[in-house]
Image: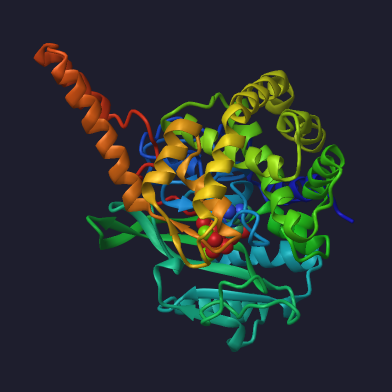
Length: 469
Ligand code: ATP
Ligand code: MG
Ligand code: MG
Ligand code: MG
């Protein structure tokens, strides 16, 4: 079996042999992009190279980029534990051409690596192209010999990429692996495409147009290539398993949580073990890159991820803080590829331990309140927003944790009621402040606090940067 670590190495070596500059992963906190919460695609660190703002001494590059999609435009948090293919933290393998090669070479590279070097059966691969992209359609026929019915024309934005309202843009071509008809789901573009049978493994973006205010205004002088392949998804394919959580890395993490909780990842416990393994990775890597739990901003996204995992640890019967004891398994699996994890190990452990110790003080009582509130509710019903707000305000339950807790029972949570309760609390605090006879300038403080979103952070609503791949 090829290990995930070997697959990462194999990808980077293939493209290095083909003349690409291997670049280390950038940190998860974007270095010069305030519109973006976390790096969520391999191209993010190269944005300015694609637009021409920045020059590099090479015209092609390759990387394995750490990505987090747990808020903002790409939020996969709610999928985690419940689909075979989504993580909050994952690695995106990519090859990039900055005005060097274009479509033909990009498709040739992808096809050669997948079917020749890695030996995947060509009949299990399907490609999509943007519906008007006859050139890509023809290249898949010519280079890969794919039959026409396995080159699917997609008319939606899923197959058209843009950096933002202005800048480079162009059609994409995605490569899917068919895990077999024993798994539910249809081919891309079909009504049941969201199933796990046909899994998107690799997205090739052909940057060929220039956009201004959402209008294509011309061709780029030097068309470019940006690709992204999910390491965990290709590892599942190459290790002959359908589910990312059955790959070597995830098995090792799940075995650690099984052993520390003396439980098995089966039945209703399966999702808990998966959530714990996934969130251990995102929490560990975020702390290693300098994010600490907080009540706002990036730190609140981290806190939400940590607390979600901690509720699942509690569900598995952990009587003491658990997450920090799993860090050695994470470092054993991923520390060689990411030395920052080794360096930060003591900080990651201390942060998880402190957060879990603190949250456990209120978790039990909060869950009791939740049990009481839902005792008479039936599937399809919605928990009152005020209750969710009380859980948030008094017991430290992030909104999405309450949602996740009720999901198994088929219950929802009233978001509008929650927001209204939050607004009401702010109003009451302001009125009390006013009533105290304090000066007008204090009011200003409330305005500022409100504007900065003092208490809750639900992702940058104005996260405009389109950084898929
Ligand atoms: P999907 O449609 O499956 O959600 P996507 O189209 O959002 O994927 P892209 O933005 O095209 O994904 O990212 C490039 C590649 O990164 C994908 O082809 C996939 O292999 C991988 N990927 C994307 N999101 C995730 C995730 N949440 N967890 C693991 N891998 C992912
Ligand atoms: Mg997605
Ligand atoms: Mg997709
Ligand atoms: Mg995609």
